[in-house]
Amino acid sequence: MLAEAVHRDGGTHPEHAFAHTHFTVLLTGSFEELASGSGSRAMRPLSTAFSPPDFVHRDRIGRRGARLFTVWLGHQAADALLGGSECWHVPRLWDSAPVALPLLRLYAALARRPASLDPFEVEDCVSQVIETVRSRPVARETRRPRWVDGARERIADCPDSSLRVTDLAREAGVHPVHFSRTFRQFVGVRPAEYRAHARVAAGCRLAAATSLPLSEVALAAGFADQSHMTRAFGRVLGIAPAAYRALLREGADPRPRAMVSRRFSCDGS
Image 1 (tube, rainbow, N blue to C red):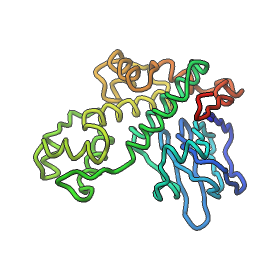
Image 2 (image 1 turned 45 degrees about the vertical axis):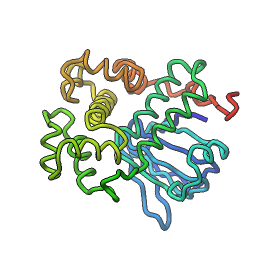
Image 3 (image 1 turned 30 degrees about the vertical axis):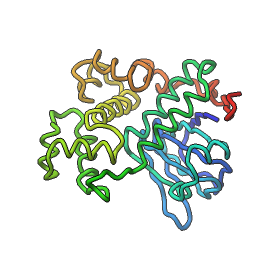
């Protein structure tokens, strides 16, 4: 099931748990999950959380509220997609744009064309999330090099900069070819694609949280101009920046969208 939750006010919800595995991306606002014995998970816009079945926690919502999009997996779908790996038995949290963007693409598609979205598209987007967060060793590296995460942070923190692969490779102390190959193996995408995702994520945050004209949003997010940003949004999310902003605009209709009733089964029904 795909669902959008809109919390208009802040506060803390009582302790609870859900029976099904789910991925949740925070669209706007602030949101924190508090779990006894395992600390807390504080989310910022475009953070993605994974929760296994029966994860007991409390929700703390920021004073300006929060809007979240969740993909719930039935037991059969969870077994098929996650493969029963032990790493999916514990809660996880990512601030990586490539993790959130496939889920945002589902969110946008479901808001705009719920009747045409099918299980194949849903499973493909969830598979992209799983592939992105799964570490895969390469032939010359037996474990994830520390510089990989450093490079990810540099790209994510500076999507509007003129940073080059050669600069990152020099900082990492490796050859540029080795840098690109190893980055892709451990992160799941090429450095250029990761930067494109970081720019789209920055554009999403600015479009949702500010009233800046989209031309200024484009420049602040690192795009050459608004048309460049529009093309990137179309490739990554399947939606234009103006339409994405409209989905999350302040004062949007609080009534549930059609998406909250959209359910899928493994046989496609």
